[in-house]
Image (cartoon, rainbow, N blue to C red; front, side, top):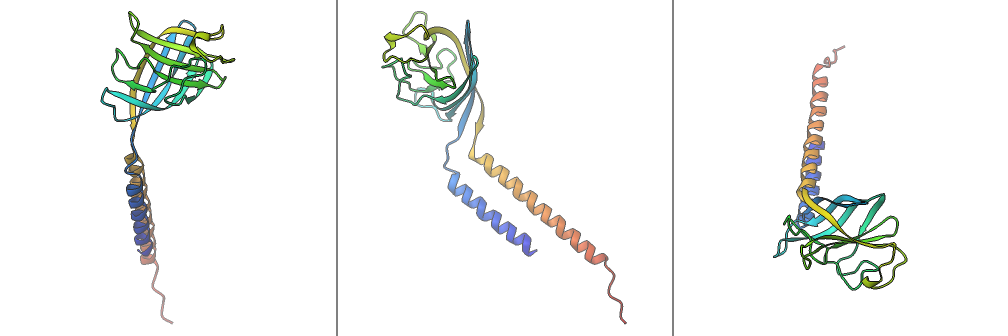
Length: 205
């Protein structure tokens, strides 16, 4: 019983620390994204905050996936340009609006081969559409200096939220683990008590 009480107090303390220490952490949305064009296949996951701004856009905070045979290893920081596409800066935001999920600034990423990509929505064209800027070494500053290794192509793009990652999920796992640990300890104690009850009383000599 002493062990059970100690375990309960320990778990309650740990759970309280987790609640008060992490309950303020922001939730995150995970999105499936993909785009394609002749010779291009790219897809993966985006991580965003779970609260849109006043215009319905979510801030992208992370990206994973592949572009053709290249692994995407990071998100180009918000407020910067991908090398070779200066001075156009990225806002790294996305919306649920199927007609215009990205802005004309778009988001950017870099790959395992050292290449950079800027995906954006060209709302200034007629008809408007999604485009990919692909920038490969050597990088020459300025969008007007695209080399033969670079490209700017119209693509078909889509992204859909698939799940929410919340701090409460951690609490749920901890709570389940706590109940499991307490139940296991109770079963062990009951088993020991049953064994003790079945032992014969010592015989008087």
